[in-house]
Length: 265
Image 1: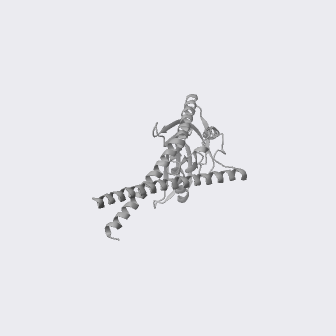
Image 2 (image 1 turned 45 degrees about the horizontal axis):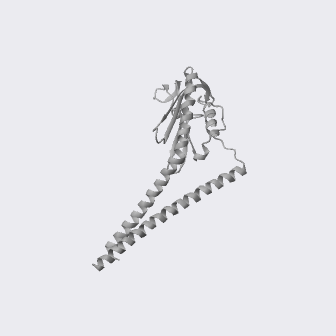
Image 3 (image 1 turned 90 degrees about the vertical axis):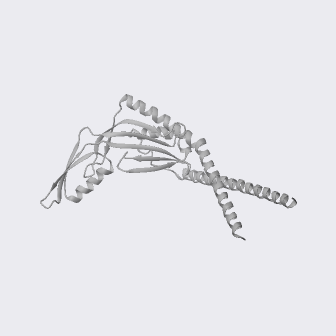
């Protein structure tokens, strides 16, 4: 086989891979448009009306965070709800944000540089505004500090359409405690019951919203659903590969007929 044939085969293999990838991406996009996007719109419609009522009623929710140096809880007031989306025609990112405010600043005094620095990291993890007034010895070593915590704690509940994995991701920041958590759902999970549970969860009336308690029967159903999804994806991929192969064979046949006509000429 000459260098030209080798390069030709490499080009054809690359084109076939690119065709398969284009078809895979097209299938994923079709699934997003048909199944995922309607659920994202449903979530947005609910959240938009939900926060409109909350803000109009000026409904304040009492919440607590383990924000004291010893880990004990401090009281905050949750309010000022806002929801934004990245697009009205192809929603892929939806952000519900609100704030948890203190009625008055919290003041704590700590000794020992390690405790002071550790507690400073805790406050940074909440992204909360605070002032720290340090007391140092003659060698400029930190011996004590006074913290004045002003707040608020900013909370984000984000829904993202994950086209590549055909899922809807739920990202939660600073809701029950500092930090982030991620939960992954398929579009079939976004039911009226799920959305109602989400509303109660935001109001701190449904602590078990994201804590699954699944019996063996339902676990088996989930396993079967996952297997069915995998089989469906496998069949779609096989069909895409079959179509690509068919196109390649047609192209080869055309080239073959062209060569015959050249010889006749």
